[in-house]
Structure formats: C-alpha cells, structure tokens
Length: 199
Image (cartoon, rainbow, N blue to C red; front, side):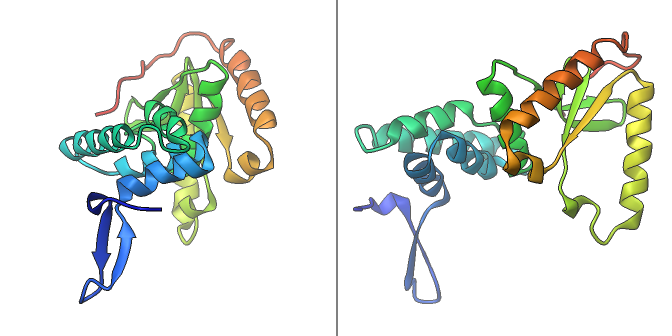
C-alpha cells in the first residue's frame, strides 16, 4: 500500500529501515484485523504515558483515522478508537473490558480501594486479570497478593481472577463466570471502604 511520509519512521544508522509509525500501525491493525485487535493496539499506545502525551496520541489517532476515510476497514479503526482506553495495563485487560462492554457491562478501570488499585470494578466485584509474569521469579509476590485480596474482601469486595489462558479458551465461559461472580458480590452487603477514581 502507498503510505504518506507522515506515517513512516526510519531506523538504522543510515535510515535504511522504514517502518510505520506506532499510531499508523495501531490504525492498520484495526483496519486489517478487526475492532478487538485494534483496541488492544491503541490501548497499548497509551500505556504508562503522561497525560499530555495521551492527549497527543489520541489526537494523532483521530487525525489518522480521519485522513484514511474511505479506505478499506477504516470503520473498524473508528470503532477501535471509540473503544480505546488510556487506563489499560495489559492486552488481556483490554480484551476483558471489551468483552464486558460488548455485553452492556461497563466496569470502572484502575479504581483505588484503600491503598490498592484494581484492574476493573463492577459494583462491588473486583475483576483482576493475571498472568504468570506477575509471580515469576518473585516468591514474595504471591504472599503479598494473598494479603491484598484478604484486605479487599474484608472491606466488602468480591474478587474474581481471569487468566489469559481462560480468555484464549473461550470468552463465553469468562463472561458467565464474571456475571455469576457479580450476583454473588451483590450478597456481600455494603463496602467499608469506597472506591475512588484513578490518580
């Protein structure tokens, strides 16, 4: 495909390798692979960026999508941009959020509960998305995690953990587990520590 110069970066000592810029890459992932994949790609652009850069990235995404109006798959990119978030901290967090959103469930992201921050919060249900990397080569991490969960439960929250393996095996079962956990969370009574928005 023909690319505009503003969509290209060059790498190497002599600029001998041409690559698409990250924003264009994310837009093209949405165009060619679908909304779900596009949201994951766009969310990743925002990860760990300060607010002024988040605003700049969103503007670049909007301008790129607008510039490519009429191109194949651009509707996917527009929907991906609408569904993207500056708060996601992993691809699977993005995927779980999308799964819930597609089913009319809109959890809050990265909420603070006491000294803790949780991935997704739906009422009093905490939804955590965990992979093995969190505990790999760190034996104390598992113990700290147990302590954290105990404290959150003592505050009146219900916790469910979703793994990448579960998401890869089937979204329907993940959605069923989350909805069932939500029903159980509604029987725990009021929380003692209210959740606050992310910093």
